[in-house]
Image (cartoon, rainbow, N blue to C red; front, side):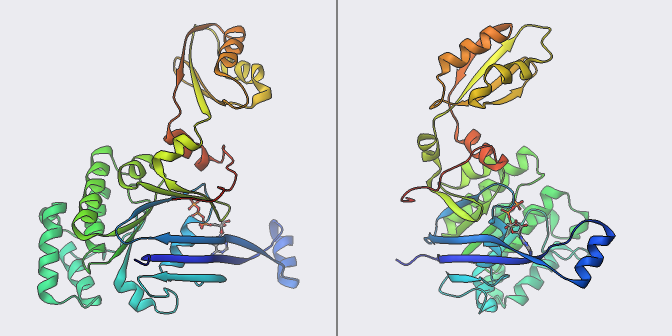
Length: 344
Ligand SMILES: Nc1ncnc2c1ncn2[C@@H]1O[C@H](COP(=O)(O)OP(=O)(O)OP(=O)(O)O)[C@@H](O)[C@H]1O
């Protein structure tokens, strides 16, 4: 079976004006324009099979959105090849649009002033969905997403959670084979997030939908995506099972210290005591959480140093979670070596 999404040697470079700050800089730029080249995507290979659900994660500026824009045909690659459902997205955008759908948590594809049902109908027309198929899909979406009370309401009057439910429904009206979700749960409360994840999961199961998700929410990834691709500076640094992240990068450990009163400078003191190993130190209501690299220092030594530097009341050692690893990668606090023999 050939992959539904395939990319080889994908590169995207942007040319950006290089201006010095202030009016003088603007004038100088007008007289002698200078540009710099930014390589947002730097040689990415992707192979995603039909029905897979893959998280695409990385820190700010890593190149996630640029990759999605390349796969959806919005951008043209500087080098490399892309094939999505057998189509080259940038050269045949209409065919690509019929096969895919994109949902942005920050933007809506619904018409702002008309009732939701009308937006669905318009999208059905745009994608030329035959009447009978439209009705069947609509019934299914209204049922699974509980859209009946929202159909008569204009998008501008919907809450964010209601709008996202409608947006997800709208994205599936033409029965795409691939769904790109870009931060779909941003700003939503826990209950709505859970509902949306459940919906995406059930749609995958029912329709064999392929999902590529970018999200800063670990819950989204954990629940929806068995496979995770991490990128950093435009390159893939990990491509494998989400669970395996813990095993592979499990050298990160955490000591949770409960402190006695009167240590407002606890974080600074801990940082000074452990300076040589550059731990990540977070202050909490009751003390500190110290995250460190267990290849550089043992947990015993960390505990000893903390006990000497601070009025420690209690100490606990926490297992590394995939969440903390991904969170730190997102925050740019963890440098991954490019994965050797990137595996799936
Ligand atoms: N149209 C553009 N022109 C110039 N540079 C761009 C353009 N779009 C993106 N870039 C640059 O390309 C790099 C990757 O950006 P991209 O938006 O793909 O990152 P991202 O991983 O989606 O980040 P975030 O999590 O912050 O959304 C950044 O350095 C960004 O400044």
